Length: 214
Picture 1: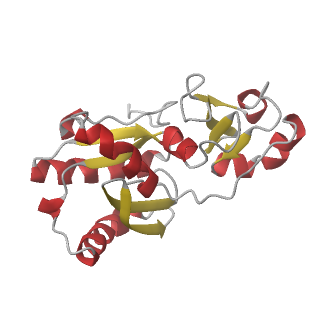
Picture 2: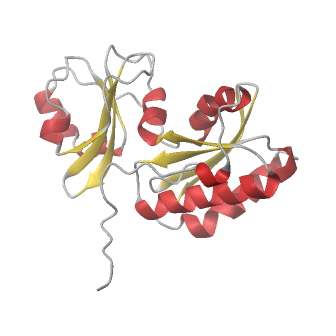
């Protein structure tokens, strides 16, 4: 389940295959559409909630509201069924969409306020460093020629990237992530790498922007 951006999605994966995926370009309306999408997907596959053996969710970075919706939904489903769950970094899942596309791969999400959430990866999806929140000029500085980019942050700042990274590439890939998330999470869950629902935590690369009342 991915609700970190306006492109939300839900998928069922089994045996390394995406059995079905529902995509929702719903802005910040995930709270209204997510559970109906889950029910529609399971019904279409002839499955019940008890057939699901584990749950995965993109834990961030991303929209604060979207993150909370996705995490709470997965926590509720996993708690009700007694199943394990797993949270993965949204940037890791994005990078997996273009694994092998170039010697250096960068996942970049629009963090607003003139910034991006970004991380560089090896061709096989291993991180080259920690994810950062930074203005594009810093986030994309020093990247080698031919780097491949993915994410709404890369699209928003495409001109800046092209001006600073020689032969920058932008492979045509959808950024609906639930199917890819499921493929990454399935072997981890099968190997016992899941956690109890209460242990799921969001990944924030900066504060929520919320302030306490006086």
